[in-house]
Length: 247
Ligand SMILES: [Zn+2]
Image (cartoon, rainbow, N blue to C red):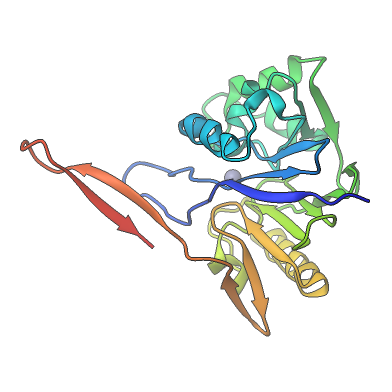
């Protein structure tokens, strides 16, 4: 049985703007078994050049992607599903039904994307928790952040990866079981506990929605590699951009 090679295309970042809403710097990963080339989440619009560059690092283009798995219908996780012309986009049936009921202007819900997912009869498939969506990739119920959020367990990867999406957004949430942005705090705590147990049982790596991969070392949680990001800031009129590194 072949295994999937797993590659981060864009690393998520656990930051928060206090002035201009969410960064939306989400995690976007590629699983490739030589036949299927699967993206876990589609990222936000600003990621389009990063996705092209990231796929090119592996000799791929957007048209090589066969499947896109969506954890939940927030803008920063779903926006680019339309750029993969040959892919099947997998969306949680209950999550889609819920998102479709939200009025335009609901925080984090991109209403046009939701409408397009509902409208398409080809290239979009609905999935349910407990389903083996693709060989060796299982959808897991992970409610809280949104009511029908899905995580994915990829058992046929070297690290046995758990893609938590925003059920676990960052290292802090896995370490404390406290979720910063959730529609149901109790459900989020239960979800984080369940995913942490799976991580313990598998001795794998958990990929949060907005952080690099995490491992358990005894009771403590560690990043598998350093967290890095940078922003540029045009501070004044002298034409110089100032870089600020974060993390
Ligand atoms: Zn979200």
